[in-house]
Length: 156
Image (cartoon, rainbow, N blue to C red; front, side, top):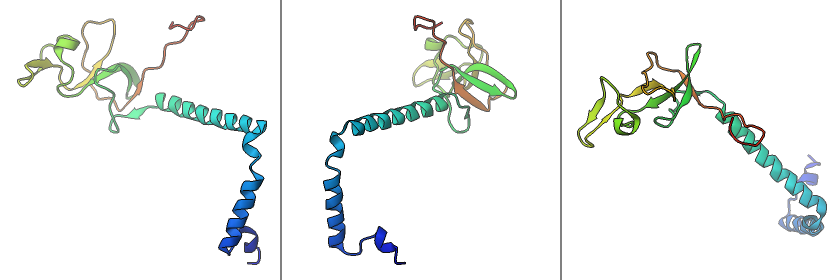
């Protein structure tokens, strides 16, 4: 193991001397134009990687047993080979006062004196006054995709 000496300094003073020489050699580095460009490129790469990870998360199917969407948030759900737009209502979260009446089996809470939608998944059609409970439980869900943008940058 004679080559170990090339990579490791056994003496503490040798280590300190090597660090001092390295610092002396790199004093010019932060002020160079290339360093500033490299720093900018590394920062841009980190930003793009974070953006890609966020996009990957936003377009990934999430198993319902891992977590559920926010109450009342429209999402896409997978039921067998079908995909539907739906929303989830946890127990005593979506009140009829805020979300419209649910007939005939709404849950009443004596503490809040409010009536709530029964816990479950509901078809989420923004053009319907009434939401229908899904007969089968979804296995996965994902956030709705962003609307396409027109030439002026607004929604479609």
